[in-house]
Image (cartoon, rainbow over all chains, first blue to last red; front, side, top):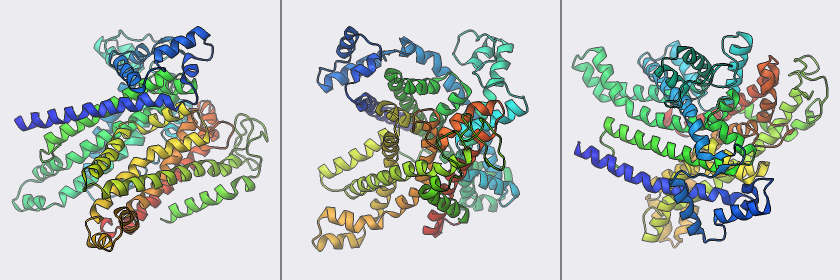
Length: 337
Length: 269
């Protein structure tokens, strides 16, 4: 236990400089803007006074280090500036949209693991069958399927042709009121408040975007689970287990226990991919999450929100990898920081 | 292997002569809007009446060029940094510091989800072919860096490196002339996969409107234009370009995979 606390503590401490460096990167993003960022940030219809205001609020006459310190201070107090497109503080915009994205990303990770791991294990145990070949071919597709195209295909088949799915216009059917705000994720809120009409509407609407993400990103989990399980089944300790006359189930339990650490790592990587994939999928399904917000901000040259979204996604990734490392340690205490 | 090879060859050929052999002009309306596939328009026409088949033929010139150039830049920078960071991982305090700093920088870049980072880079520098290439090159450097560094760490302690230094070569010369050629294989193998991946990212960026400007014949852009029509049943508008995109990316990744197995027989199943 003491060793675990030392490990976790070290790993958390290690995340602090990482997050600082991430903030430096995001701070410098704005310097990619051609010319003087003031004109871009103040928006196309800014008055001369407004431009002066923006310039002093950005502190562009100050030394770089002072500018960064100011940026860091504002970020830590949740001040990400104002979006000129929605004329709201970016923090508020993000608070409204983040739950929708998390719902999609976390949902996709959970479903991918729930399908990918058992399927990978099953295929590893019954090697050489038809299922094995199908999974091999499907695994080859990992990383080469255009997620936005798969989403469109699903819409074509399940909305247009079969009429099973609702139109891709957001998280709820037209005319269904959003549930009482508890977490911000509609499915969770509707379930918590017992609002079943809204719950089924939200559940129906999440199926296609979720399926898109799962189809495109699950092969990573599946492939890793399969190869890691195969490796363990071939390992010496399995021979020992067999020779000792342990039951088939106990053998498989031993193998699975040792096959899990790589699966945990790849789950973190899938989270990282999903954040990017969610951007495209949200755009197709008009999901109204953080990804769609980022895209709309990029298209409209609304810079404060882009900076904030990139920062938040990088912080989220850093936290995911932190959790992955800690879970990995719990499964396999041999690693060190 | 043959599948990957053929698709890649066709892609390269189209990048060279695609716009020339296209039966219709690629950036102008040539028929009625939204004609289904028929004998004249093999893949149908899109909402503004442009011939989709001709545009698909012309697309590799845009997509493959962006992918090839960005991957080549990423490869050159990544391998050079990987050799430096790997070769000087042990040595004087200054060398170790820089070697570590390169790795930490790579860590930081990889904290950003790829597509989001690409979107932000293009968003800030402005959507243009040049900026898409720079963003993709930048994003792919860490992958080549890590692969090369890993190989260099194994090679650098071999006797021939010691011999090269004893024979009077400077450390830099030893690193780039003697160590690099012997540790470049993993990065070379990754080259093909990265091209496929870059094509995918380029299409994704164009799809959300942050890539090359319309009406360039580019696969992501064509899928974007066709997306609205997909919802009302004109399936050919986005299906065809998407299929070509998926097959192309798959070919590059299969080819990369085969190359890896070919060069490293121990990983054969």
